[in-house]
Length: 314
Ligand code: FO1
Image (tube, rainbow, N blue to C red):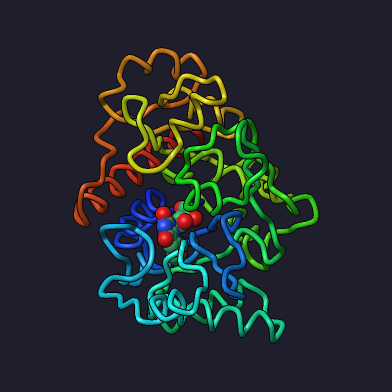
């Protein structure tokens, strides 16, 4: 079965890791959010691309989900001693990624080609695509801190500002990178991984071309919320601030027109009836991936569910 996974940060990367353990490189490709990208210390940072690739390469820091494990912070300390910025923590090995990416971008390589090259060096065999080679930047419009770049909101303000709306600056002028739409057209199944719908999956869907490529595909989304709480990050807080009760059905409703199936947690059974009313095929299970083998356990359940949804859709 050929699968395309759309992913953002840590939650999405965990399911991608499980899927990659079960599917060959020719059966799984990943399209990653780049709305979180920004310039810092003169370097181009692509956090979600790095989180997905580090996770697939076994290099990710398991505590934070971002950056690399066994990291050292020599350069960051030296930057701080020079009065430079240290609010966004760059480890020494992580810094190498940003230096190489920035150097290759300056030489005119597209982000998708740079990503392929880095994946080759990291031994990541599953194809990883940035959602676009063009710049798309998530802007968070807040009630009390004006308009913030994503990392200003997420790191500098620690997700505290009250969100009013999101903007994906540059999306209208952007396009999928070479090969990404073909992956979707050839896919049997598309999975929206348990990433933040507002700032991880929506930026990808805002790039012209993806929505209509998804129209005649079987799409399954996985809830990033359990009992109205995000397993990690500000997704539930964002829903509340936007006047929407956070929960599995809110996430299913978020993607409604695109979904064939929806995977959510058995603790949220009370939302089953509402979700079925939307004629979405449900899978209720334990969606919490507490360790590496749990990622594979859950990925296997999602793939089996995908097979059953495919059988029912033909
Ligand atoms: N998140 C933080 O909360 N604090 C940091 O200092 C930080 C540094 C960092 C460095 C590299 C990287 O790839 C990600 C980093 N992140 C940090 C996480 C990042 O803000 C988020 O992973 C995404 O933007 C949202 O998923």
